[in-house]
Image 1 (cartoon, helix red, strand yellow):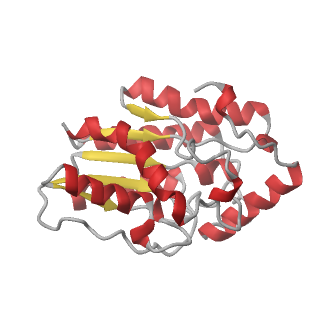
Image 2 (cartoon, rainbow, N blue to C red):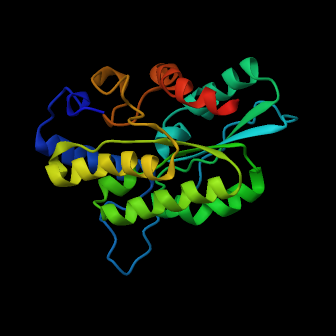
Length: 239
């Protein structure tokens, strides 16, 4: 996606810094980046899993995400994943959506959990929507990319189709980091030959009113827009 698609509202550097702290606190991740010897994964309690729409469904979409997919700050049924699950059940009978997203999750956490989730759910489609917390903690780009590759390859090895959902970082992290962060998703998708949705928040990123008081987590009212943004990339994988 072109650089012109970045956030149109230029927030002051100090406000961006405050937003980063708020996200980490809200997601359950520590405010300080861990020392190199500490585990990369945030220590958090998992949010309630979105209800399975169809308990007798034969085919499954598994979502591995963070607070943006876990429905932070709202009922699980209001989040875009749950809404996509309702649409999935209505338009594609025999399919269900399982939300394994955890607030505060990093790509390291997702990479550590992916095998167990694949064995538990046995999905036909896996949506990987992680990386935001890596970026906000300034974790090495190579590490984030390796974790994304690990998840994608595990899903493919299990016979699942993969949708990789990208994220972007605020400009105060520096041009090299923000551009490299965004490029990670494009490069992984191209190398692993999976579908890419470049930026989850694309439909609402320019609308400050779309976000909760922390100015980063989308509110319940705009979750249908996120569902409708993801759906065109997801639906072809159901065939």
